[in-house]
Length: 182
Image (tube, rainbow, N blue to C red):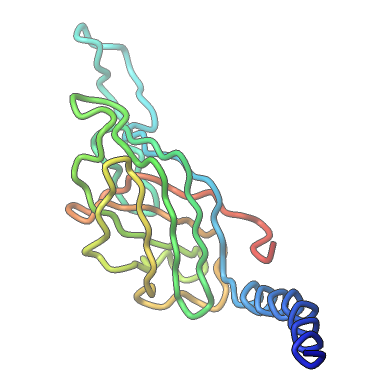
């Protein structure tokens, strides 16, 4: 009985130490993290005199790192992504839904994949599986994959886009967490 109690005490005392060591080991392997995000607005600006129908003669699309925006406004409630040095990516998204048009509030039966861009490697598209994962009816999704091609050892000016698996336009972008180890 005394041995069992002593063993239980050791386990209780060492478990937090072991978990902290695991967490610190994982955080040292992190290339970049993203917390929060923004849905796409397909137009970045308009110019010129407004036409009689309310449109504008000059419209600039919201193209990011060479990727076209979706044709309609989308919103995202939350986005968290962790990308490891070996290219392993985990993304949890919540509430990725249409914010305009007749399908407003729906997921448009879309599937999504993730793309990481790093300025220091010429903005190569590092993608999760292009087949994507389906959005849940409420717009939630989870990606657990390996980026291809693998990202560089360092990633300057990182951009994470959540993209449509059908036409590869972007739906949402992540906000980089500046201190990925915390």
